[in-house]
Length: 372
Image 1 (cartoon, rainbow, N blue to C red):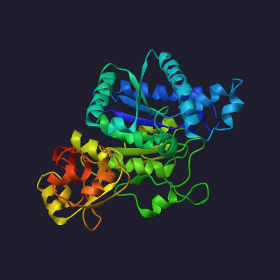
Image 2: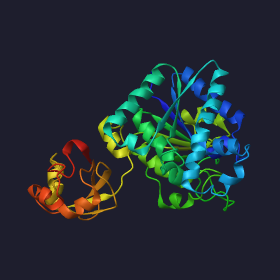
Image 3: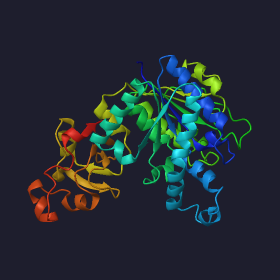
Image 4: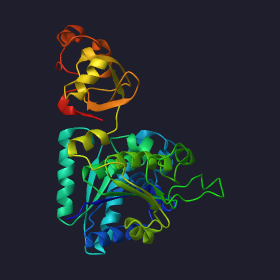
């Protein structure tokens, strides 16, 4: 089996801006995924839309007016996701059944992709589904997690899934033809950018703004996701979700109506992809001695820590920076932010006396970090 393709679709594409899931769009999406599968391009579909499905279902009930008064609150969105998730999957299954195929669902949260054990479990499950010829449908576990509801509309999740399955390409479907050099809704002369070979310029990032229809993601969110995937050696394509007939040519490197963002590096080994791809929760500044030790493959000790930024917990992934603020490494921290501030600059044998407990002599173990 060749390298998988990750296909991300947002709420705006699935609903066409109508507020209701569009069956014809979902059928076209599944048909394309199955067609690619027949061409030895297995697809993992990362799909939003659970909240929209839940909203559509409850709008047909007598309790609609009650929850609509609080519709902007996260618990209500989580409730809508809990209602809509099985309905969304059922619609995808119906579309797949029309082609004699079947789908499978995987719900992931941020922590699932930051813990090594659950990362490997998710990876193995997705590989088994692809080997079995199924179409995996991945979504954020919205009923208990809030990142997707507040920030990225699954764009970041799709980049993490792409690294998880060793994808060669990540396709981000949107309600625009691709990335423009100016906001197409505000500048009539805005031009479609067909290819980006290097880092995305500040001008293009400034041109990417706003959200898409009923989704929470926008082009800026897609560029952030693209950054993650491209650094892991994955090519990213952005194209119109209602113009799926354009995608095969785009996948073959013929960008006529769409944007191709070329990979920025080689595909990394699994542990490095895990550490590079996960969402960092803060940063640790280290001194020159600690910097040298890290470059020699050693662990980070509290004596080498100058300070930290962010309110992170034990087990979170952090950026490790030098005294000039430059990225040095990424790693999983052994102490939360409050504890780390108390032990920064102190010897390891002082930790228990300072904190009253002890999680180990190191702040970040060498097995849990990657030097950039």
